[in-house]
Image (tube, rainbow, N blue to C red; front, side):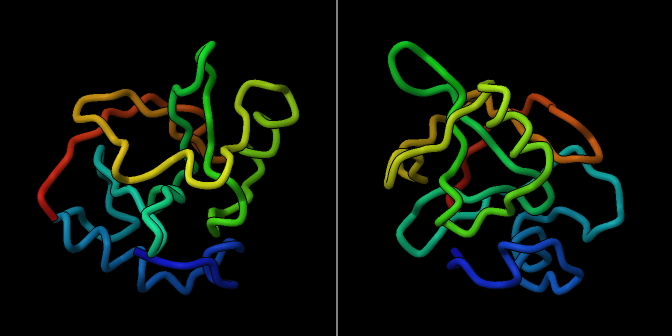
Length: 127
């Protein structure tokens, strides 16, 4: 868990929280390549992002891709901003994207300015 701070809202090399989260899940530290990542969330269990990507989940009715609200402290990245401006994703309302609502094996859209958009799959653990 984390809370919004200067280090979550801006791209930075100060990454101890991200590195510790990856380490807890057995994911090698960056820049080692890995097909796995870890979801980060606030102390209130609101989803934020992964250790290197923004995220969006298929929610609502009719379904649309919902990304964490910027107030959680997620990085307001270039790809995230572009997807929002193009109407391809929408920003969540408070409490809409919660750790408690994750479903094992559900699809997640991950994205950043370097890699573009990728599909991911949620694997729930007891950690």
